[in-house]
Length: 198
Image (cartoon, rainbow, N blue to C red; front, side, top):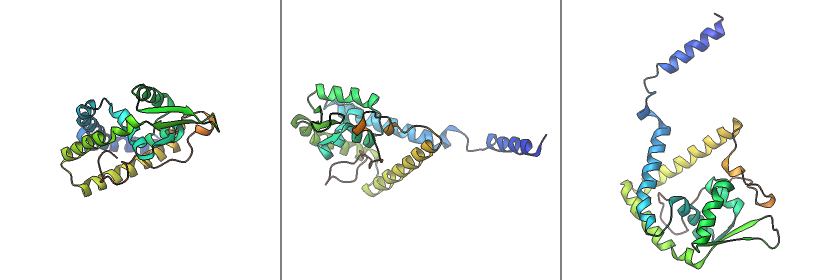
């Protein structure tokens, strides 16, 4: 056996014998499990205001900015238009937002919150506060965790782009609406405390 083949086989054997290669030691599974638990905690609270979690994060952006382009919304939520458009259609049918082509550039879709959508902000913030309390973490601990996860997510997205995988935020066709530079992650409206909803 060639030395390079032998080295490769030994490396594979080393990986196979790793004692930490079990489910409960995996960061990916811990993040997946925590994400499911978080959305599960939100679900009954958001049911009270007739929103799914996916719709809730769309509304978070609009409570913060009131009106954004479809391209920016895709970047903020790390979703492509194929995933986002049905969410927007349902929210529009509920009277919580409007979608319209810009007069000055019809390639660009503008998404704008309605008064009915803005009126939900207080009830949504109350739901978010209850989820924050359920974590049992202090505001400082939540901030450290949130910032750390944003950093991990950014590095993983960069690694995915380096391997040739498309970033979901890059999948928005349509000229002026096409995402460009990555925007900041979703954050709760100005003046709110550091929260798990961000």
